Structures are given as structure tokens and as C-alpha cells.
Image (cartoon, rainbow, N blue to C red):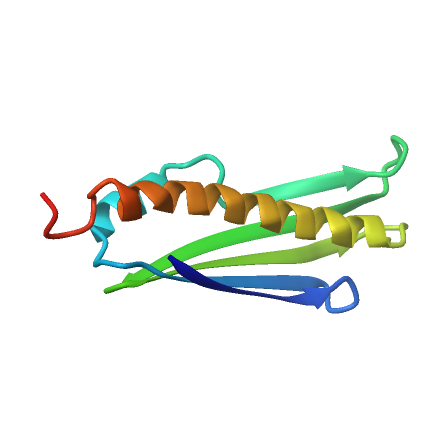
Length: 126
């Protein structure tokens, strides 16, 4: 399985994008993989709230995830948007948290893809 991953954006942009494209060695059964990802609690769209030392000040980060399948290509896109910053400055720690979350999501996604490429869940292998 070949892959290409691009992560762009920063705290200054208030948004971070990730596109991961996987080239699989056979045509995937689209319904089965989509069902796994859509029903996974890991990939659900989610809001994260960070408070500073128990103060009312907080940052809201929204994560949205979409997956697309076409023949041998599986694309996963993730968007992190900082929705609201109240009375606090964003730090490099916030940016590192987003990049760490992206890396963990990609790790889990590749684990979900592995049975489709190794155990015969590719169309025509039944």
C-alpha cells in the first residue's frame, strides 16, 4: 500500500488540513470500509475545548473527517478549525496537539485499511 500525506495550516491560519491518499492493490469493497469508518467513535466529527487553569477562558477546536473511495484510491481528509479564542493566546503546544492527533488518526486508519489489503476483503477475492 502506497501513501502520500500532506498536512498544512497553522495556528496563525486558525485551521489545519490533512489529506492522506492511499493507493491499495485492489478495488476495495466500498460499503464495508465506509461503514467501519462512519461508525467508528475515533473518526466522528468532534469539538474539543481547552481551558486555561480552570478559568473561563477557553479555545474551541472542531475536527471534521471525511473519507472517499474510488477504485484503488482511498482518501482521508481531516480539518481542524479553531472556532473561538477568548482571553488566551494560542501556543505551540496547541499546534503540537493537533499534529499529534492527526498522526494517531492516520495510524488507526492504516490499521483499519490493513485487512482490506492483506486478508482478502478486496473485491473479487471471495
